[in-house]
Amino acid sequence: MLTALAGIAARVLPERDEEGQGLAEYALILALIAIVAIVALIFLGGQISSKLSTVGNAI
Image 1 (tube, helix red, strand yellow):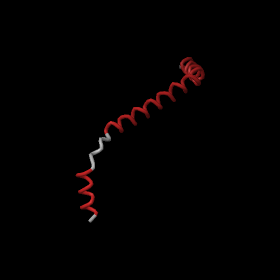
Image 2 (cartoon, one colour):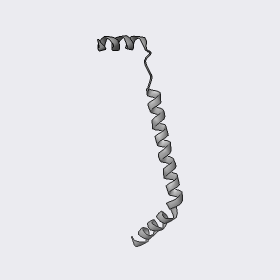
Image 3 (cartoon, one colour):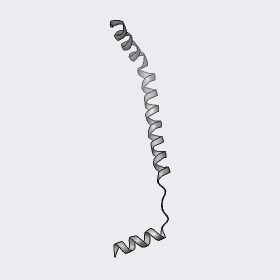
Image 4 (cartoon, helix red, strand yellow):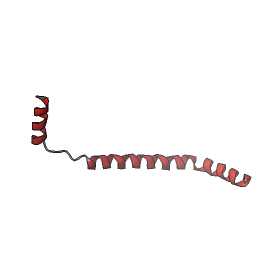
C-alpha cells in the first residue's frame, strides 16, 4: 500500500532540483570561512608577523 502511494506521489509531484541549492550552500560556507579568515588576519596579523620574524631570525 505504501509503495503504491509512493509511486503515485512520484508521478504526480514534480521532481525537485536540489543541485543548485547544494551549490548555494557550499558558496555560503566558503564565504563564511573567508570572512572568518580575513577577520582573524586583521586582528592577529601583527602577532603572527612578529612570531614569523623571530623564527626567521633564529634560522
